[in-house]
Each structure stands twice: as C-alpha cells, then as structure tokens.
Length: 115
Image (cartoon, rainbow, N blue to C red; front, top):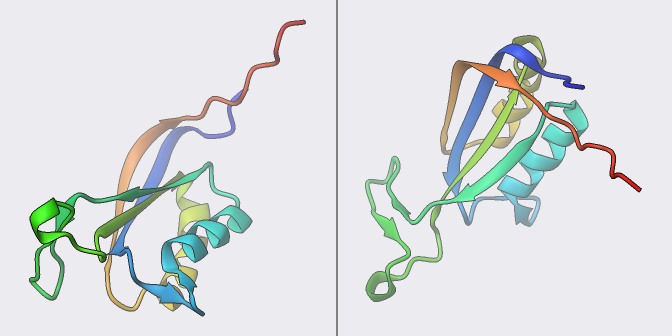
C-alpha cells in the first residue's frame, strides 16, 4: 500500500547547523512541524562543505573545522500539502534557501513481518 504515488513536490530547505528556533535547532523544529503537517516524510542531511549568503566557506575538514556546517532538510508530498506547509517555513527560515521542484513519488510502507 502506498500513500504518495505519482506527481509530487519536493521541498529542500538549506540552512545552517547553528540556526535556532526558541533555543532549539531550527532543523529539528522544521522536521517536527512537517511531521504534524503530515507529509510523506522528512530527512535532515548535514553538509560536508558549503557557503551561503555570507560567502564564508564552512567545512568539516580537520584543518579548518567548522561548527556551523550547512544543513538540508528534504520533504516530499503532494503539491497541495506542501503549499499548505510553506507559510510555516516563511515563519521559521530567516536566512537560508527553500527550493521547490516537481518529482514523481512512490512511497512504500513497512511490510508485515511473517510469523
């Protein structure tokens, strides 16, 4: 059984690892709000190296270890559900980038375990 099959909209949110919302990591707040909104799923990916609006390069390489690495949060769902979630991103993301792109989705749910 699948819940999301066919046309979908993927949201990728690029922020910094040290971005916070009420003293908690911003990426965590985004994932928890996404969970409440009910998309097919959401994942957080920590970048190895990158730069943003500041043009400063942040890297995980030992010689120039950064504690503020780039983070990407990715979620996919129907276009209507994603667009309903966008106002929350507008509230949360002060500095970053949000990308929307169309895709095809197939969501597999857990299979029952055989006895």
